[in-house]
Length: 345
Ligand SMILES: *[C@@H]1O[C@H](CO)[C@@H](O)[C@H](O)[C@H]1NC(C)=O
Ligand SMILES: *[C@@H]1O[C@H](CO)[C@@H](O)[C@H](O)[C@H]1NC(C)=O
Image (cartoon, rainbow, N blue to C red):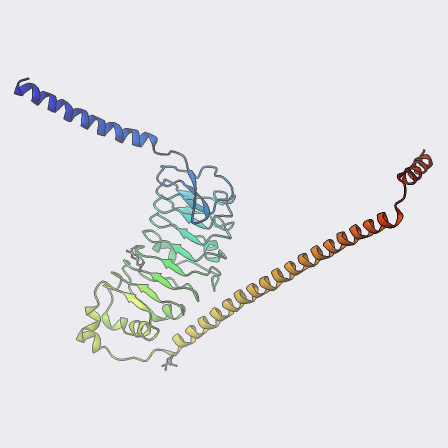
């Protein structure tokens, strides 16, 4: 073999390897699922349909508790799109092209705990979302058209959903909507919005808030207009996330006119606390009643069982007693039954 031949052989080898690589890529693509797959995750039954380029939710198996339909091409959610899946607890619809949501599109999902509608082009929200009885986490981030609707959103307050997390980051919001009392809210993400104002009143209605993300959202605001809100965060020990805290340590901020926290903030805050206590106590009393009910039911079942066992025991004993005392010949019994049969005939 001369050197040229060796070179050619090597090149061929390399080419083959390359082709093989391409082949495996194609194979991988071809073998990628084109239908939803089902699996158990965290002890729950879920349908996994992410990244399938679907423009409709196909007919799914009943009883699913998780539906991952992110990264698809869904555009509209009608009232019957999800109505047969009331068992869903976790619904992921991020990275679709959703712009339209019918008013009662989610209202059947009474078990829904997490709703992810992030990275869509939602034009208007349906009010029913805010009254879902189990909804704790709502992701609306990355909806660049949502701000057009939020200012005119009319909600019945207080909203019924026990929201603990609300993500409104990257929604081009200038004026934050007033949600009314949100007594369970813990995390509020309003980062990456060109806010024109930030009113402390807004946060006084969130009496369990522990973290608010305002990264890249207060750049357009005058420092002194932040004063009361920042004082409120500090007083209520709400951790606020910012990209740059140095502004708040500046002399300009220090020299802003000091102002008392207005009384109406305290008022709203206490209203929120009252509502929180009410919600907690209904929860506790419901739990207590469930426990009592459960205990009572258990006791009754046990009692009935006991009676049954005693009954069986008695019957057995009577039978045994009868057998032992009588020791009657079998014939007598047969006679009587023949008599009976005669009667019937
Ligand atoms: C808030 O949202 C932004 C952008 O969506 C994200 O990067 C950030 O991690 C979120 N903050 C929190 C505290 O979750
Ligand atoms: C509001 O409450 C804080 C402490 O909870 C108190 O220091 C402040 O004086 C109150 N403000 C008004 C106007 O009542």
